[in-house]
Amino acid sequence: MNSTGVAIRIIVPLLLLLASTAYGAPAPEKDLTRLVQEGETYIRKWNISGASGKADAAIGLAETGEERHDAYYLKAVAEYYRGDYGAAREYAEKTLKAVRSGEKGEGDGFMEFIQNSVLKKPEFEEVKSEHFTIRYANPKDYIIAEYGKDVLEKSRFEIGLDLEEYPGDPVIVEIYPDLESFTAASTLPPENVEKTGVVGICKFNRIMILSPRLLPKGYSWSDTLAHEYTHYLIFLKSENTVPVWLHEGIAKFEESRWREEKRNVLSPFYETILAQALEKDGLVPIEKMHPSLALLDSAREAQLAFAQAGTSVGFLVDRWGNEGLTGLLEAMKARDDYKAALADVTGLDFDAFYASWKKYLAGKNLTEKIPGVKVKGIRISNTEGEKGDGSEDLVDIDNGKARGHTRLGDLLSTRGRLRGASYEYEKALGYDPGSPLISTRLASALHGSGDTDRALGILDPLMEFYPENVDIHLVLGRIYIERGNVRKAEESYLTAVSINPFDPEVHTALAAIYEKEGRTEEAQWERKVLDILTQKDEKHE
Image (cartoon, rainbow, N blue to C red):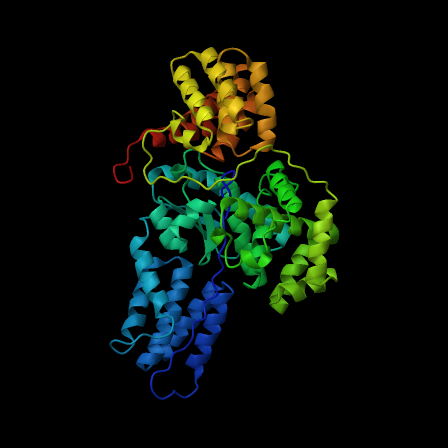
């Protein structure tokens, strides 16, 4: 799971126990029972090719209805995990028909889930890179799929080096076009998605994300892909033995590696909420993080859990090196007990490790770097509508007077009265100091009215505090273009793409940069993106 500034992304591991079900007198022991049991083990370890092979062999041996039930069950699960939804549904139906009328075998509820899930699946298209198959449904999400290939391949290389794990089979990534299909596929409750900000999940041997089209300002979908890919590697390397808190900690620790060499969880945002929690003795108990961070009480609690888990992994690597991290995953696979594995690697029991981690944080002298930081869930719309005037985010301003002055500033700005707009935004900040939403509006108005130096003075600290705020990068891109700093402009606009790739301004600017520099292929791609963004698709809009 990954975040939207305060949005979260979450992983919920599924340990399916595919039990052979006996009806009537028990059948004599034979190879079919062994094949199904071995297939169950392969499913748990996400060895899907192995599980499918065992299922095929079991189907060939099945004679009774009970035996066909178990063999078809294994095959249905294997095909669902493989991402072949047609085959999964076919074998799920065969499983349910193999039992006597009116009876259900153990786990047949999952067969019904497969049937319903497949019925609700979007009509996916695919793009492929060397190691990934990326599926999308809304035509505009093709943009994400194409940009995502680079993010995922870089993640495979860099995070693979860190965790010493490279999948042999192509990894399936699915971009969901609406909240309903995302929650149906992920099994996450819709209310938890919006409350805690879940936008991605690694489950059923695949990565699933919600399209950033559905959030007013997008979210850091690129880091989300890297975060969920890290979960995928953890599943494979540990053979599905890592608890949720550690899963999330490693994924948080690694999520920026595709773009940065240094791994660092302690951003100003996470430092601020950790400092507040330590001062108030308000850390999230590790036990509460199970079975999912998406089920915590609030976005703040979920983000705090990310900060705790991520810095605990940072502590592990700082003290015991990267070998400590890879060694812990290997020990987890061997022991299937995180406390015993942690003791093997560090020489500390869990209580001692936890106490040492708290001392490690205390030694960093954490401070509340972001005054008045707010942590909220996310707002999701299943219809894109006409966006771009900024009015949809006014609901995020809690103070009524600040909201009123901001609305007036927006009105003046749309009429070209930028000095008047700046005045209103400054008044709004008097009621809501430090608001990134109001501050970026002020910076944009100041730049538009010629006061670029003041605009930069506002944007510099915002960049450190709120790097996932796409408007900051848009305003910086305009300023750098105006000042002739093409490299910095390109960097700002590409960062904007990694958050919200559906803004035509970004691609218009990038196309102009590339055309001027003779980078024909890149310019053609940006023009293609603009064509996609201007096309109407009645099926999805």
